[in-house]
Amino acid sequence: MRKLVVRSALAGLAAVVATSAMATEWNVSVWGKRRAFTEHIEKLAELVSKKTNGEFTLNISYGGLSKNTENLDGISIGAFEMAQFCAGYHRDKNPTITVLELPFLGVSTLEQEREVSQALYKQPAVVKDLARWNATLLMPSPLPQYNFVGVGPAPTKLADFKGMAVRATGGIGQAMEKIGAVPTSMSATEVRQALDSGVVKAVAFAPHAHMAFGTIETGKWWTTNLNPGTVNCPVVVNTDALNALTDTEREALLGSVDEALDYYIDYYNNNTMKKWGPALDAHGIERITYSPEAIAAFKKEAAGPVAAAWIKEMSARGLPAQKLYDFVEAEIAKTAPN
Image 1 (cartoon, rainbow, N blue to C red):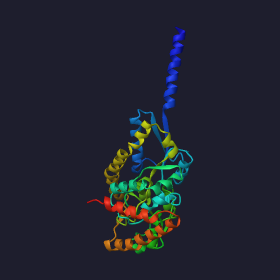
Image 2 (spheres, rainbow, N blue to C red; image 1 turned 135 degrees about the vertical axis):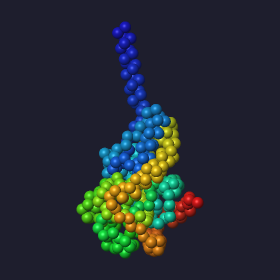
Image 3 (tube, rainbow, N blue to C red; image 1 turned 90 degrees about the horizontal axis):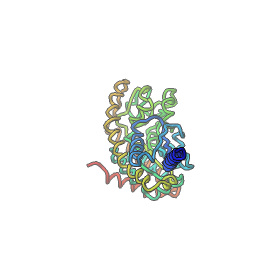
Image 4 (cartoon, helix red, strand yellow; image 1 turned 180 degrees about the vertical axis):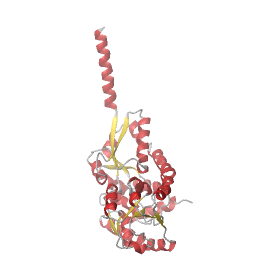
């Protein structure tokens, strides 16, 4: 009887060990706190676990694994298997996708931003670019046009931005330079302190980030329609880790991307944006709206010259810059809402 009990215990232990050995856990590096910007990752984790009966899990860490500006580096050495980053944080590391951060591209909805990004991510030059970091692009984090929350005198006309220190990355920063602002790039987690201390007078973010990182708690005004552009913030996976998945695990991951993005866009449109107006009102933030003529002049001054400079710089690096730019322009035209 004792032998039977021992055998049963050993069999049970072996089953536990085998189950544990078969389970796959990925670490995911993001930053800040859970918010609209990370809802597709949270949904993806939920779907992957459900489809694999808990045998494949995504452990999401908000700042515990890496600085947000170093997530691509962490992916490259396999420090974690999945991460989110923004192209403008380190444009030299991911030059091909910075085409999506050029100002005034004309993307008008999150759905369109998603479609254009996903199409670009499949381009051979883009795949090769990210492969240098052992990274495979998994999905975008579609964001609306950025606008500024700021302190001090409100810039009621665009000329008022002249000499103003602003937090603006990528093409948004380049566009702001065209009207005399002084852009600086810093990670999202550094922004509140910079605004409070006066290092910058205005911060360009999408609405969810203004709420998540507390700029509306300090800010006095908000530009409703400057719309200089947006940032591109993909979710990537370590290519070796992706290749090491079983067929079932890989299908659970890749087959859940579209549903996760559907959930993300619905959440952003129907949750975050409903909170935005009341949040501005609650903090007594003045809304600044510019005339169509002022916006048209800004676009004329920034869009063409910044795009031309990007094409020249990237072509000099040996990248098919004109081809990528033309591809994006064609995709935007093709996906424009009717």
